[in-house]
Structure formats: C-alpha cells, structure tokens
Image (tube, rainbow, N blue to C red; front, side, top):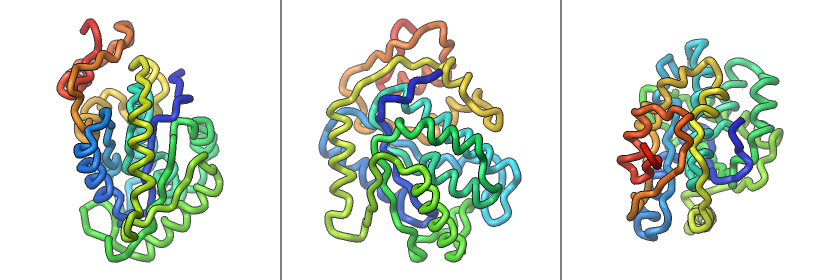
Length: 256
C-alpha cells in the first residue's frame, strides 16, 4: 500500500465556475516571486476525461474521473512535494454522487485517505464566473445543486483543515498563500513507488495512461535550481514516459 499519512496536498474545491483555475494560475505567479521550494500544481482531471462530461454524462465518466483523480493524488503524495490541486476527491465525489448516487466503496476510500490533505479551501460558486469550456455546463441551477452537494460531502468527511476562501475580498487568498509557503518550506520527499500506485488504482482508469495525464496537468513551480533525486526503487518499474517528465522538471530518479 502507498503511505498517504504525510499530508502534503492543498486542495482548492468548489462547484464549476468558482474561479479555482484562475486562482491557481495566480498562485503560480506568487510562488515564482517568492522563489520558495518547488510546488506541484495539479490541474483539473475532468478536463481530460475521454468520455462525455456535462448535463448528460456518459455512464463511464464519473467512475473514470474518480479513479484518475485518486491516481494523480497518489502520485503527488508519493513525490512528497507540496501540491496544490484544482479539485480533489471530495468535490469530485460531489459530482459522482449527484449523477450516480452514493458509493460505500468510494466513501470508505475517501475517509481512509483524508490524511493526505494538509488543507482544503472552499470557493463559493458564482454564476458570473460560468464559462462554456466544452466540458462543464453553464446552467447556474446545476452549479447551485453541486455547491449544495459539496457542502454535504464536506460536512460528512470533515477534513482536518477546511477554510472558506473569497477571492473577491481584499487579502482573501492570504491564508492559502501562507499555507503553501509554510508547507513548501518544510517539504519532505518520499520514495516514488510506482508499483504501489499501479496496484491501488481503480479499474475504471487505465493506469498506463497516468504518465501522459501527469504530463498534461502537473507543473512544477518554481523549477528546482538543482536536480533532485527522488530515490525510487528500480523494481518499481517507473514508466519511461514518467521518467522523462521527472527529468524535465528537475526531479530525476536516481540511477536511471
């Protein structure tokens, strides 16, 4: 099993049209200015779902998104760097349960892996922020329904540190900034055990495609000034595609 006990993930959650992606882009600029230790920025998994997303989703959509989200989070946890996520399993489960009903399996898994989240920041949905991106609907009633469902999910699982965030209020992101800077100053890398990630990944998501997904949605900011060895075990058979991505981001596996 992959050890998720070391909390290194900061998640920004909220219904579509909350401004999560815009906020994450702002935080990249902040960290470049701060020149702190590298932080993983993880984009939204659903934008890369191979199945239809929207008001009439494919039956395979929500299981794929949940499994892909979990696999990406396991990867971020394994690296041990501070990671800022555009969504996490909590708000993905709000969509999943809205469309497919509750899942005891996913609920048990979320409860068991809450320790991977150092903090969760909730953004309110705003109808004015809704944009047609070809994935999420622009129906404000659907946005409200997901926001309400997410509140229920957060009340059910009660992450250890949950903060409301208002990007329109002056200084509204200060707590988020200080959380990321504090975590990245005290970073603790771990062994990248790829085999553990493979073994734990749900069948709804083809784990062989994970390196390509990581290359699309994960960036390292600021890039490390010096190359960092992650000390993976060679027996873990890290895919060459992932080795290439790690190499390009100054996170080279040792002895590869």
